[in-house]
Length: 228
Image 1 (cartoon, rainbow, N blue to C red):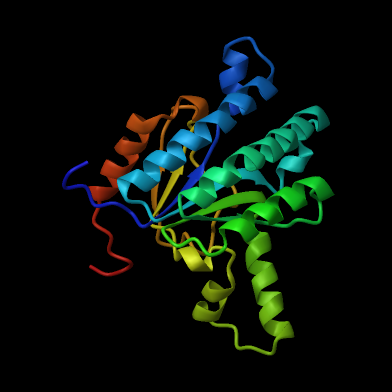
Image 2: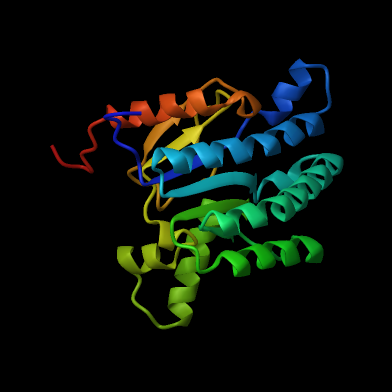
């Protein structure tokens, strides 16, 4: 991708797994399985393209309202994914961090997550943030409450420094697959000046070529940050 200006931090709302499966006459869990497989190739391609930090929206704080069977399968796939991915993350000098609340997660899933974060904590080349049981509004409220408890002044900078993605910086580009045109409570504060890219392509079909299209679109935009 010569002459393409690559965003430093990219967020992706991975939407469309269920609809992809239903279009094939399968249950929604079938789509989540293929969506999980797609994560690896997109993460690899993003980092090879020059993206420094990647934040993936895996499961929102509102997704618990989905049918229990679907949620249970999602949690199983996430645990399986983390177990397989940890070795690759560590060897690739990628720092893994799972952002969002953990109180609702199972003890065995938390253990797998903690293990991955601990083993990759000293990695420096790239940051991979997985948003799990995450909500942007909830994150902002938690950061502000922590600042109040610590007796610190609430400013733009102190809020930014307290966000789960603080080490990755503000988000340059947010991509949403699946055709929906909304942020769905994803990275609301750090995405204040993000460029937005929406595509009708469902997540399991979102391949390297589709990611390149999003990166090229970003490269062609002029970011003003409120200026002329």
